[in-house]
Amino acid sequence: MTQEFMIYRTMLSYNPVSSNTVIIRSSPAMVPVICYYPRHGNVSSKAIRPTWAPFSTTVSTEERLAFSMYLMTDDWSARLSSSIFQLGDVFNIEASVVIDNHIPMILFVDSCVATTTSNVNSNPSYDIITYNGCLVDGTQDDSTSAFRSPRSQPNMIQFTVDAFRFIEVAASTIFITCSLRAAELAQPPDQMNKACSYNKATRSWSAVEGSNDICRCCDSRNCAMPPVGQPRRWGPVVGGSRGIGKRDVGPHPEEHAMATLGPLLVISAETHHVASTAERVQSLRVPEESQPLELWLLVVVGSVSVVVVAVGLVATGRYVMKMLSPQEAL
Image 1 (cartoon, rainbow, N blue to C red):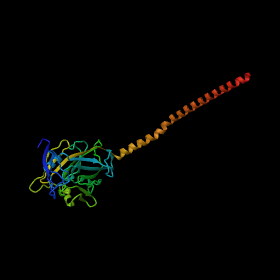
Image 2: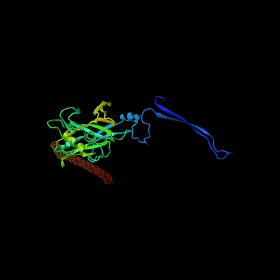
Image 3: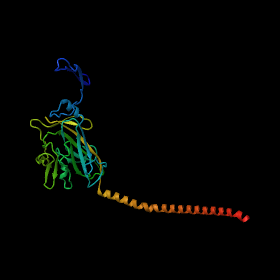
Image 4: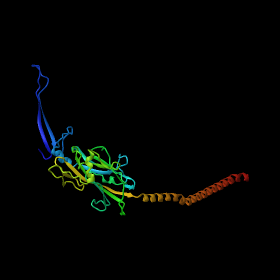
């Protein structure tokens, strides 16, 4: 053992065997073999995927889980470059977690809250997702917010939120902060591990995975379901500003983080109409203001043309007179 490596040494020996008792066509050999294994990280070639998670793998990958949340285009094919919206638009939100050598995990959005500042505890605030995956914004009469189902992949979840503004607030910027959680893929869907959307047509909740019964707690507003004999609680935070931590949930490992979108600028339809009208008026004024300039240019060009023609005529006349003068003298 060294500080960086665990070294494995062995000797391969070869003793030739011949069926002929008189001659042999090879020689014996001794080949030393030395293998260096790094003492830090997972040295597996990933060819074998065991159901158990070695301690070294767990330690090395806890630091590599990277949670993220982005606004996406309407077809969900790329990230949205603009952060300016108007009422009537839709926020296409995609949350994901990057898993390197970790055991397979599934991503959930436990909660999302909108505020006018980056401080998630500031007022005013508006709950978009609550109760461990209940998209309560979809219950509003003027909202079509919902999770996309089915998922494209377990470590990613997508949902839509209709654009909105806060009442009685002059600022039109909003921040959306969500609590993201990665759980073991083998964890069955339940009241704590769910993604539920509200269906206004049937006045009921539907789950992205599992039975719709796990969404009933969205109406009762009590989705807590601790394991038998052990309370469910948050463990200590092990990350930095990302707020990454672990949950003590018995045999199922979990990690969570906070992610924020914003500032998002949301303008009303009236503001957009006024801005568009102003742009159209300005575009109409440009040709009118450019007419005096165009007339002046025509006058200058015409004057220069007259001068050039006059100079040419004078020069031609002088040349003709010069050519005729010697003939008259003779």
